[in-house]
Every structure is written in structure tokens, then in C-alpha cells.
Image (cartoon, rainbow, N blue to C red; front, top):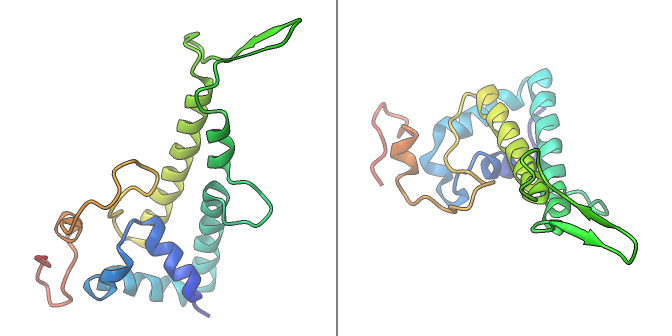
Length: 154
């Protein structure tokens, strides 16, 4: 048994590797093949991918956890004619919704970290961050091998 092409794409995505540079990343591609050849290991990775899909919203009909948090982003209080409810963290700063969003993205990062640790592959870029593509230095930063013991210089 092995990972489906969709699962392989998800693994690359969550670990932050540019899909266009698959050829330059034998470490990740080999890890995908090795882990996918072991049913117990594959099941663990599939569980992590399912949890990550819940965070990002890949399940039809069920809003993503991150979307739910974004709906409340910036919300500090709700008022009606009879009552007022204020949201806040323990400091009373009124940042519950922001901390809710931070909690969801931190949870996503934690799952990606578990995926990285289990597969033995470094995280190339933070898909739950604001930075986007980090440039072609990802191969040098993560010590990607050319397959011949040399570091890739891109």
C-alpha cells in the first residue's frame, strides 16, 4: 500500500515544499515512499492529514476550524437592547477572537511539526504563517541533498 497522489500532494503542501521542485527534494520523496510502504506508519500520517484537513477546510460541508475562527476575528463585544457580552482573554484585552485564531493556527503548526518529526523531513515553510514562499533558499536552509551527498545550490 502507498499514499495516493492527493495524499502525497498534501504532505508536500503541509510541510511547505514547492510542488514544482519535487525533483530537487529526494529526501522528502523517499520519505513519502518509505512511510507509505508501512501500513501502520501510513495510518499515522493519514490521521495527521485528516486533522490538518479539518483545520484548513478540505472536508465538504464542514467549515474549516480556521474559517470559524476568522468569522469572529476582531470581534470584541456583542450588544443587544438588554445586554452586552464582551469577549476577552484573561488580560481583559478583548482579544478572544484573535487568540482563537492564533490557537487554531498554532494547532495546525503543531500537527505539521508532528508530521515533520514522524517522516524525518524538515519543514520548508510555514503554511499557517503570513510569509508565503520563502524563496529558493528553502533547499539550502533545510539541507536538501542532490542525492549525491552535495547540498543543492539553487
